[in-house]
Structure formats: C-alpha cells, structure tokens
Amino acid sequence: MNTIPYGKTSKQLVLVLSFILYAFLTTAHGQESWRTDFDETCARTTDAMSLSNNELKVLIAKCDQLQTIIEKQEETVRKVFLKRLQMCKNLYVYVLESKSASEKTPK
Amino acid sequence: MKKISCVLLFLLIGASITWAAGTKKRKLPPYEFGSVTINNYSQQSGMPPVVFDHWIHRQYYTCRLCHVDVGFGMSAGATKIRAADNIKGYFCGTCHNGRTTHNKKAVFDSCAKEYSREAYNSRCVKCHEIEKSTLKEDQFFKFAQNLPKERFGNGINWEKAESEGLIKPIDQLEGVSINKAKLKIQPDFALKSKVEGMPEIIFSHKKHTVWNGCELCHPEIFMGIKRGATKYTMIELFEGKYCGVCHDKVAFPQSDCQRCHTKAVQ
Image 1 (cartoon, each protein chain N blue to C red):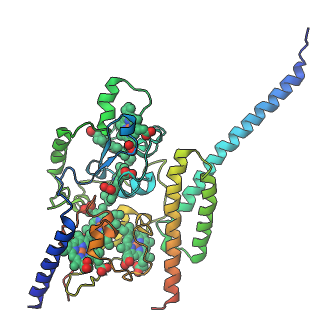
Image 2: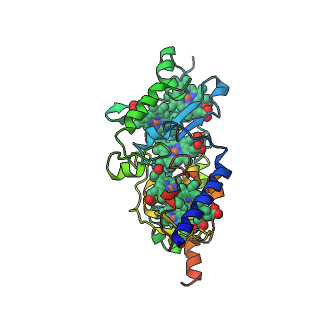
Image 3: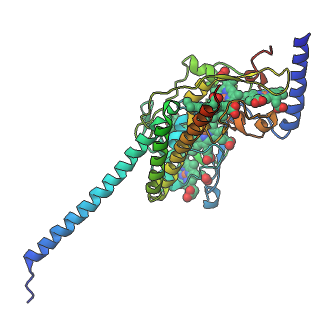
C-alpha cells in the first residue's frame, strides 16, 4: 500500500495554486496597465500644440516603450494598437518638428 | 475686366484639368459614392466580397471615431480585416457584435466560424453582398430626401446636415475611445494657388479637426511643417493625394471646384 503524504501534497497544491493565481493576476494586471498607459500617453493628441518640447519628448519616449509591450500581444490587438500608437506618436513627432522649426525662424 | 479674365482662366484650366484627370473616372450614382469593396480574404474563402457604405455610417459616427479609434485605414483593403478580428470584437466587430446597441436595437453580429443557412441569408450577406440590393437604394433615397442637397458626391451636403442638427455623429465609444484632453484647434488659413488669378482656398483647420482628428492628417497625409511651403497641384489631388485622400472618395468630390476655391482674388 502506498500511503500518500497528504500534508506534503496539499502544501504543493497551495503553492501551485498561488503561483497560478499570481501569474493570472500579473498578466491581467499587465494587460490593464498597458491599456491605461496607452490611453494616458495618447490623450494629448488633441492639444499637442500647447505642450512644451520636453513634454513632447517624454510622450514620444513613452510611445516607444509601449510599442515593445504591444508587439508582444496577440495578433489582433497588435494590429489595432500598433496602428493607433503609430498615429499618435507620429503626430507628436510632427508637432515637435513644427515647433522647433518655428522657434528657429523668428517671424 | 480683370474679374472676367480670372473667371475665364478658371474655367479654362478647370476644363483641361477635368479632361486630363477625369476621363478615367466614371460618375457614381449618389448611393454608391463612398462605398468601399473589401475583398482581401472573402472570395478566396468562398464568401462574397464585403461592401461597406460610408453614407450609412457617417450619419451616426465621425470619421475620427472609425479612422483613429477603431483603426480603419484610409484606402480600400488597407486594414487587412480578418474574420477573426471581427469575432474578437475589433474593426467591424467593435459595433457589429450583437450586443452594442444603436437606437435601442442591438447592432447585428459580424463573422462567425459556425453558422446556419438561415444566419447566412439574414446576416452574413448584409456585409458579404451577393448582389447589389435595390432595398439599399430605396433606403438611401428615403434618408437623403430630408437632407440639404448638393450637386455632387452623395448629393447630400453633409456639412450643412450636421450644422443644422439633422445628423449628430458621435465621436466617442465607451471602451474604445480615449478620454482626451480638451481640443485645442489650429487656426484656419488660406492656401494661395500658385496659378495667378485662381481663387484662394480657405481651409478650415477647425472643422476638419472636429471631423477627423489631427493624427489622421499629420503627418500621414500632410507632412509639411510649414504652412504654404509645399505647393500642391490639382493633378496630385486628382490622383488621390493630399486633400484628394478624402475628397473624391468620401467627402465631396473635386469636381465641385467652387466649394474649395471660394475666396475671390484680390
């Protein structure tokens, strides 16, 4: 007869379960947080012209960070959000260039 | 005297440009203007091609909502929409999911892997159009009859329809759109034509931004960082560049010269 070391298994079980729970929570949270980051980062396309050059540079850097995260998502999310991110980042770059150019040539 | 010669010049150039660029294009009936056929994958998997009508959708939603927030590209087929994307709730499936409501009715669902013959006939073929439906034509004329008229395009003056409150396109979709900072508009300006005597163009940055959002135009369509530095030619516009990305395909067409060349020559 094999006696099952009950105590040990249940400890392992708890460990495994909590690991699964942890993994689940972090991925769920991870998803949430990049979406929130995306929303925050791209919320300024409506008033981009009133941002300072520095603020624009920070936003552009955040877009680059987000890109590496979004590239790891599943196919459809990647397709949709890389496009949205690209439009938002490119506008910030455009506005930065436009503002820098007009600063250089005094009217 | 000066005025007359300007008008003559305008007409002459107009005639030659329309002749040069317009011969390829046929004039569409008003209900087909702004219709897009999407067929990257349908036919190859045994489904009829998809027909998307702008007139049906732009009465309810702004261009910005679909082309910025939902992420549709600005030329036919560019988005590479897959049935799987729609099923997951993106692209057409953002709204066509059998759950989102519109006028208190659920908007019909989009693609599916498994479906009955009945579902095929009642649902799939609404988008995967087997043949042109006369029902849609009738719906168009019923819809258009109460709206301000225009000579070209859909035969509808969409701008007026909106400013008179006859249509109220929504700009935000819960869970899809971002809560953006308050819109800060760019000044409107006049574009001087490089041909002496052509009426100037008044371009409303304000109106266009409300409809489209800055990021739809900059830098994808307009990359010039200094206003007036790039000279656009009418030929380029007719080829579908710059203003021609929208005007001719969905917004009023370029045959309507005076709607853009409005400002009298000084």
